[in-house]
Image (tube, rainbow, N blue to C red; front, side, top):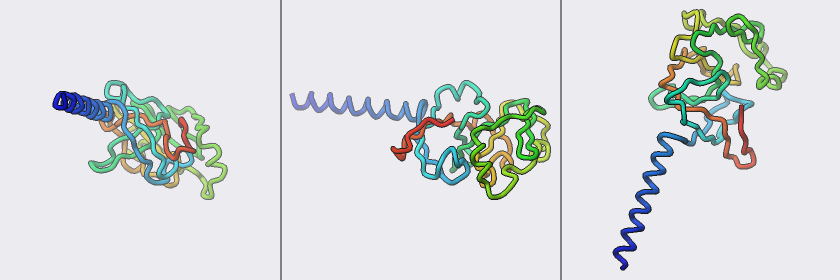
Length: 181
């Protein structure tokens, strides 16, 4: 009887571990925000859940907050600004996509309180990457804290296959539990 019960427990633990590995690898994973590049939306040391569902088969949407492999040992978290075929530019603190100004309401409070103006320096996609539009299969990303973010202005466009998933759920610190957009 004891041997049978031990075997059942061992099988249950093995199944639970297998499920945990599959869920973490294919569906959801925790991430810790490292640094100030996404302030005020995300704070240093916020713990988030990365939703990997669908990102292996679909494309990110504009303004998604995504996690991507920046180097072999480091993942970054940034906001998708430009999609394939988009021309991206910034002029006088205004984002232009395909020549049209685009509102970034998530930056309004931070822009008002920024000590250094402009909040986002002027640039064009051509000036940064030599490309007139975001290449197919890539996205252009920016941190919300534009003055303190290493993003597509520095590392170029991000290939889809480097995007791990969408991060929009902060679970720690518990008193800061929220969904972010």
